[in-house]
Amino acid sequence: MLKRYRPSRRGRSPADAADLLRLADGLAHATSRLEDVFWEKQLAERLERLIGDGEEDALNQALDAASESEEGETYNVLADAIEGACESLRIERDGVSWDVLLFAAPALAWSRWQIGAGHLSDSQLQNLRVQLGAHVFSRIAKIALTDYLFSPDQLPRGYVPTAELAQALGDAAFSREALKLDTTQLPDTKQFLSDTRYLLGAVVVPAGAAIFRWQEDDGDRAEALKQWQQQGGAALQPVLAGATFELLLPGAYHTAWRNADRASRAYSLRATLAYLVLTLNLEPKHFQASIAPFSSRQLEEYRVGFSKLGDDQVLHGIIWPLLDGEDETSDCVGEIEALLKEIGIGDIRVHEHDFPLDYCDDCGTPLYPNADGELLHPEVPEEADQNDGAPRQLH
Image (cartoon, rainbow, N blue to C red; front, side, top):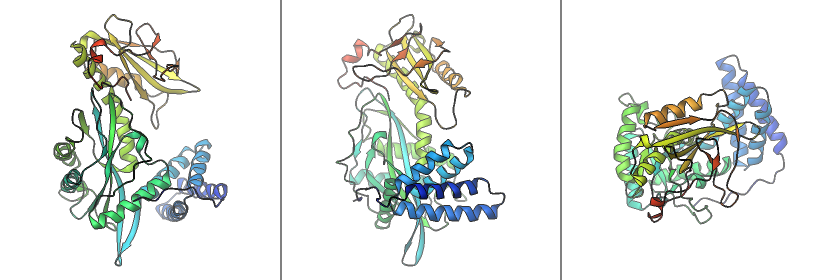
């Protein structure tokens, strides 16, 4: 059972944040591998202490300060160091050092009904652990899983809680038991047509040893993904019954989470069309899609509205958020257009002027563009109303 996180009361956050910023800046401007090692050691030791003391505020203040600096590399160095410090650790057992890595195994899914989430049975966990051990992680790895399949809104909030989860899972790996979570305080899973589910766990290996199967001499990353999608997919099928889903490659928690965010954009677009084709019994060529940029102070996202060809009403829509490193110079529109053409959309409209981030005043649903540039509330087709439990929004 994880302890409940409580913020530290030490009150030294500004001084600690300044110290972190100094160390990260030193590492960002290092000119040799030897200097790298010096700064990395100093920064890692400071982060270990702050995380152990529950100094969440200091971590966030340091990141905020780094983001406001003109030195973008300092922010990247600090963010990587903080993420690494809370998702990995080294522990001692009977005089032997072990490396612990918190990992996530994402699944992209869509369904006209509810997408599964929640607690996993002992037999399901055992099957998943076997498949991860056989295809994803090294032969000597010990693996522990949480007994819960998370939706995005239920993932750990904050760096300190993430580190506590990594520690608890690392301890559980030695007993080869699942980590039983008290999930009574987690928010309810929101239901969307397309969404992501996360299996969380920790892998433990002797210090310095290979963690993943592809780190071994006869391992291969592509083959690991193929086997995990086949065998792991069969293991998750009972949990995600009624959903179409695609497993992504498991990896370190933050990287796997970001990869899933990026992959979910194209997946949601494909899922929307699949849903409309199935619901309205029309071929892709009978639909049109409208793409538009949406901004507040700066470009935040693109929204894509789907309609029947020649019809003004928006049936469904997706949000294509800008992710790390993307801005108004990124060719997101080109990427979206290429995907829409690939899946056979009959007509594609691109609106070049920025739209405001408007939502429905009554229900909070995003408004999407139609071919004429009007922002409209998506209206579920009448045929979809006949499907009990069909979600009315996209994530």
